[in-house]
Structures are given as structure tokens and as C-alpha cells.
Amino acid sequence: MKFKITLIVLGIFFISCSNDKKSTESPKQFAKIKSDLLLSNSTTKLFSNTTNNDTLTVLINGKSLLNSIATFKVINSNGEEIFCDTISTTQLLSPDYRTANSALKDVQIRETVANLFTTEEYSKYFKNNL
Image 1 (cartoon, rainbow, N blue to C red):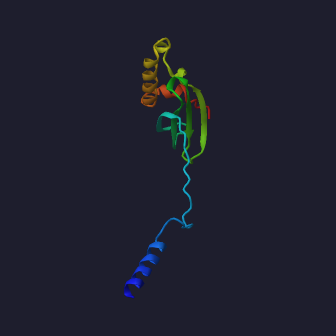
Image 2 (image 1 turned 135 degrees about the vertical axis):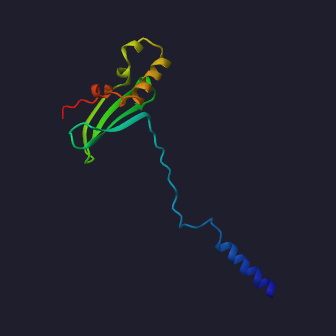
Image 3 (image 1 turned 180 degrees about the vertical axis):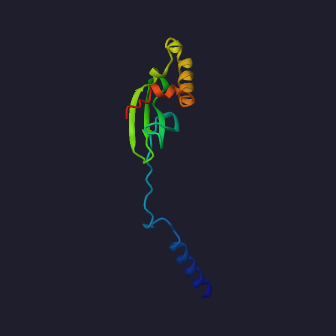
């Protein structure tokens, strides 16, 4: 008799622990996020006024460096976007590299973005007409 009761209790226990028919779990949904951000660089500088620093950012978006867009943004100290402009990344190439092969052009674009804020070079892309 004890053996039958033990079997029934174990059976009920195993059935109640089964996850086959539980509806309490919601199905998980996965979103596939596509990001085509290739490069970015950012700095804080006095730009739109002489008292507060602004955040200057360059973002390169696209499928490849030579077929992408460079976006230049300025965000003021209040978090407001005060400047946004886009150009083709081929416009970042210096005249010496315009006839170079694609590998050299890629390297030159990467170097331009990486070193953009180390000199006053950025001023030709970020127009301070605010």
C-alpha cells in the first residue's frame, strides 16, 4: 500500500513539474538589429559659445567606407542638436588620395576620422555659423 501511494505521489510530482503545457512563460521575441555604423569619433570643445563645451561627433554609416555617408553633429551642453550635416566619405579624402586604390583610400578615411579633432581640420566640416 505504501508503495502505491509513493508511486502516485511521485507521478503527481513529475507531472506537475513538467514544462510541456505551462502557459505562464511568454514566448521570447528576438529583434534583428541592423547597424551599418563603420566608424565614429567624438570630442568636446568650445564651439557654439565661449562658456560651455559642445560635443562634436562624426559618424560613418554605410556598407563600406568608400560607399558610405559621414554625418557631422554638434550637441550643445543642454543636449540639443544644434548642427547636423552629411557628406559622402569620399569627400574626406585628400586630393593626393583621389586616384589611389581602394585599400589606400580606406586607410586614409580611417586616419582622417581618427585624427579629425587633433588639429583644426574639423573646422572645415563643422561650420560654426550658429
